[in-house]
Image (cartoon, rainbow over all chains, first blue to last red; front, top):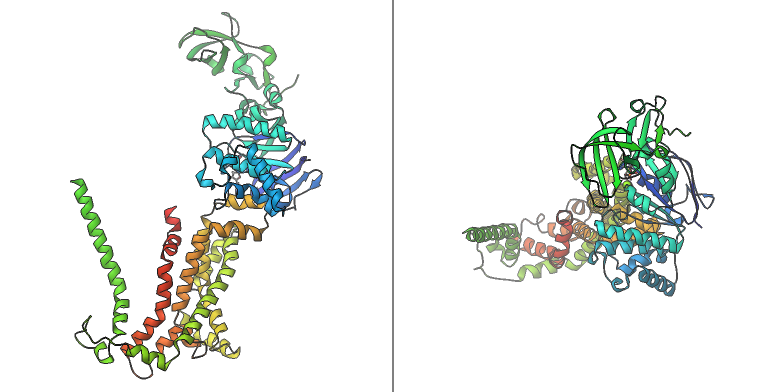
Length: 334
Length: 276
Ligand SMILES: Nc1ncnc2c1ncn2[C@@H]1O[C@H](COP(=O)(O)OP(=O)(O)O)[C@@H](O)[C@H]1O
Ligand SMILES: [Mg+2]
C-alpha cells in the first residue's frame, strides 16, 4: 500500500514561504509527476514527503497515518536523487544491499533480493564494481536498484534523468514507467520538463511559486487547463494568448488557442497575419505569424505547406478548442 | 626550443625544492650529528661537519641518567589518548556543523578557533591551581585532558572542512535507506572521510607528541613525556649540547618513523580539498 495525502502542507525557510498550503491525494499505485518551472518548490515538496525536511504546518498522511513526526528512515519510502548519491566506497552490490542491511535482513535473503533487483535492471555483470567505474546510465540504474530492492510504499524521484544525454533519457523514461507499472508501486516523480511529465504520468501536479495550480491527468491538463499558467506551461509549442478585446470578446480577458488548433483558412476567414518564419519538418509545418494587434501567433499544421516568410495567411481557430480566461487568469467555463 | 626551456625550468624548480627541503631538514641533521660528538666538539668553532670523533657515549649517558622507555611510553599514552578522545568528540561535532548547520554554526567555529588565539601562558596559573586541587599534577590523565582540549578546535576545524566536501545527498540517501544517525556516521560518513580522518589523526598525534608547554609545566617525572625528558638536559647542570641532542634525537625518532611510513596518507589528506 502506498496512499499519500497532503493536507494544508506549508513550508517556509525563515521568512520565505516556499510551499503554500498544498493539498493532494495520491492514489496507491499511481504515477504522479510534479512539474513546474525551476525554483517553484518541487524538490522541497518531495523532500517534505520523504521527511528530509520538516513541515512548517499541515499533515502528511501515508496510508492514513500522519507521518510528519516520523523520521525518513521509518516512512517506508525510497528516493532516487538527481545526483544519484551512490555510496562511492561500496560496490554496486553493497549499494543495493545497504537498505536491506540496515533493516537487519538475514544474509541469504539480502543476496537473493539484490540479485533479483540487479537482474531486473541488467546490472548483474557490474555487481562487484564501484560506482566510479560505471557510466552515467549504469549509475542511474544502481540508484533505481537501491530504491526498488526495499519494496517501499512509494518511490520518490527527483529529476533522476536530468544528468543523462537526450537519447538515454528517452530510453530510461520508458524503462522507469515500465518498471513502475510492473511493480505497481506508487511513484512521485519531479521534473521541470513538461514532455517528461506528459509522457510518464498518470496524474500531473503543476506547481508554480509554491502553489499547486492544477492536479489532473495529462489529457485533462491539456484539454481543460484551470488557469493561464497551466495553459501556458503544458503543451509544446506553447499556447497562443490574445486579448479578448482584440477578437471582439469583451467579457474575456485572455483567449487561448493551441498552435495545433489554428487552421490555415481561406482568405477573409479568421485572423489575418504575415508569416515571419516557417519551419518545415516534413510531418508538420510550424508557422510563426505576425498577426498585427493580436501579436505573434504560432500555428502547427499537419503536413507540408508551401509557405514562406512574408506570405499572407488567414488563421482560423477551432471554435471548440478555445480557452477563455478572466482577468485573474482563471478559466471561464461555459 | 620551447621544450628546452621547460626542461630547464623543471631542473631549476627541482633544485629549488631540494634546497628548500635541505634547509628545513638541516637543524634535524645537525642535531643528529651533534648527538654523536663529544661535549667539547659540540660547540667547537668553527663547527665540524663530519670529521669529528664519532661516539655513542651521549646515548649511553642519557639512558643511564634517565629512563627513556618510561618517557616514551608516557608520550605514546598521552599523545595517543588525547588524540583518540579528541577524535571521538570531534567527529560528531564536525558532523553536526557540516550537515545540520544553524545560523550560529559559523560563530561557534570562530569561537572555537578564538580559544587558540590566547597564549597558553595566560591561563597557566588557573589551570595549574585547578590541576593541583584535583590532584592532576604529574598525572597522565591530566595531560591527556589538557592536550585533548587544546587540540580539539583544530581537530574539529579540520574534520569540518573534510566533511564539507562530502555531498549531503549521500548521507540523505543513507537516511532514506533506513540508517540511523549513528549508522550513517559509521557506515557512510567515516569510510568516505578516511583520508581526512587519517591525516587529522596523524597531525593531531604529532602536535600532541611535540607539545611542550603544558607537558613541561604540569609534569615532573611520573607522567613526564619525552619533551620533559629533553628539557631535563637543558637547564639544571648547565648546557650539555651533545646530550641534549642525543635526548632530542631519541625523542623525535618515533614520530619521524611514523611520519615516514604515513607520509602518503598525510599528504593525501592535507591536499584532499585541493585535488578534488
Ligand atoms: N534549505 C533551504 N533554505 C532556504 N531556501 C531554500 C532551501 N531549499 C530550497 N530553498 C528555496 O526554495 C525554493 C524552491 O526550491 P526547490 O524546491 O529546490 O525548487 P525546484 O526543485 O522546484 O527547482 C527556491 O527558491 C530555493 O532557493
Ligand atoms: Mg529541484
